Image (cartoon, rainbow, N blue to C red; front, side, top):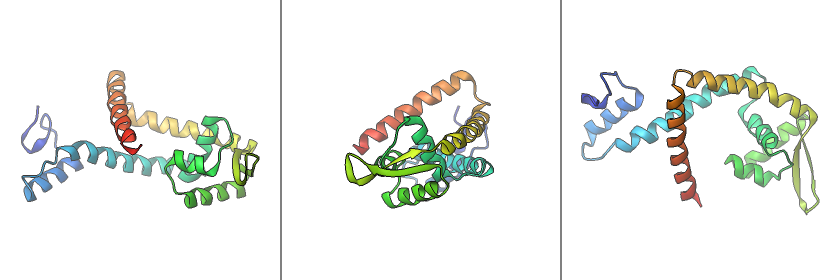
Length: 174
């Protein structure tokens, strides 16, 4: 049940509730309802990323490197820098910088692409494969702890709603 101030069941609210109240006080004719969803998704993403980055750093790896290693592991194949950039939503220059760091650390190799003499293929090394599993376990444990307070059905429902929103947003990008 919605209480005055937009809070549910007498809950004191969260950061986004306070932001919505502030905007409603300044511009009462502009709906802040979408911010209730989008603002929370953005704030959650930022907070989770910060906390997850700490987990990664405790494993001796940064987010940028983890994302590439994880993608190469998941796909199970060599990928071009353009494919990596596209999947990770990063700039080509930023992706190249990440790849260079991973090559220097001997976690990936960069070889000429036989299908495109100008291009490269990025592959995991055995050292990269050994590195990813313990890091992945740490990240998975962290993520499980974040959602442990939710019931199994709540996790299913939230996954369904977030999948629907993500599918909609991704379709708008095409």
